[in-house]
Image 1 (tube, rainbow, N blue to C red):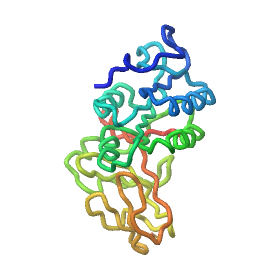
Image 2: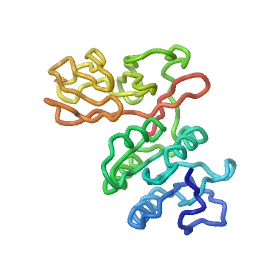
Image 3: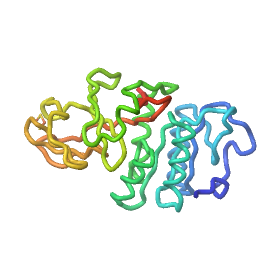
Length: 235
Ligand code: FES
């Protein structure tokens, strides 16, 4: 388990933050410098440990995925702060760790160099407070594999919910190539094939695996809240 007390101590130590908090569990000075600027731009208080429940909202948490205990830490954050934006970064490419971080509850997984840009893009579209949009009863999703649910009308557009390796994923249900309904295509494990012209996408990451589409598709964070599977809205 990551011990937040082992991290660098700057900024708000010893004071109760009142602004939403950006928690940084990394000692990488370059990453910290970039994210401190990002936090300042979005009026987030930097912290090196979780805010007390009553003190402030945890808006963003960032962790170095190569730190021992990082995945357990992400699960704990997700359980305690279901609407926080959780981000993990990799120093070196590691697809297994990337997917494990997503399964643990990360909203953003990125390589080190792209982290600040990915977060900046997301925060630029963020509402001050996230909200949850109910998609379906958790009981209805239990035990179902592959395509679990189509949600044609959500604030994020049409989505399809899949279960892959025990975890639910919400993916945009429109192909970026020519707009075909992706959920009408075949899903084989984590690979979804578009029924239009055969583009393939990774359901877990949204990554484009094969063209003719030249971009990936968006994958959206989900959380179980009050017996419902909810889409977490940040835009
Ligand atoms: S519409 Fe999906 S590949 Fe063309």
